Image (cartoon, rainbow, N blue to C red):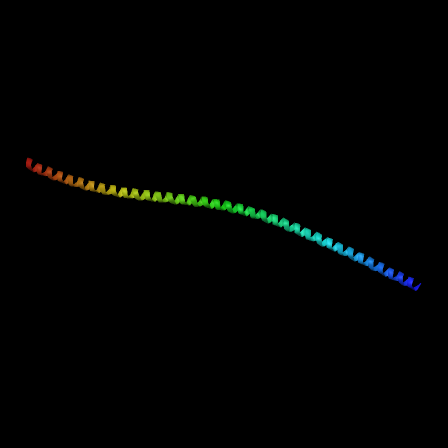
Length: 132
């Protein structure tokens, strides 16, 4: 009878331990499920952040390409403007040189005219003296 009581007692202890172990196992399983769910959510959020970052990167690359295109167009416009300015500057210099040349020709013609008028006056004066 003692052995039976001891066996029943041992069995009760084992059942109690088994129930405690089952409860502990269930608790651990719940914790693992919760941890797993948390990690899956963190992974999903990380993936979402990667998708957003990739989208922003693509947008930045597109904006950079647009800025580069605009810069190239502005550079071409600047080159054209500089070329036009240089052409206008050269045309102005040429016109100024032509004007100076024409002024010299006008001055030379005026001197020649003055000299011819003086010679005419002298000849008229000489002729007037001969007629008299």
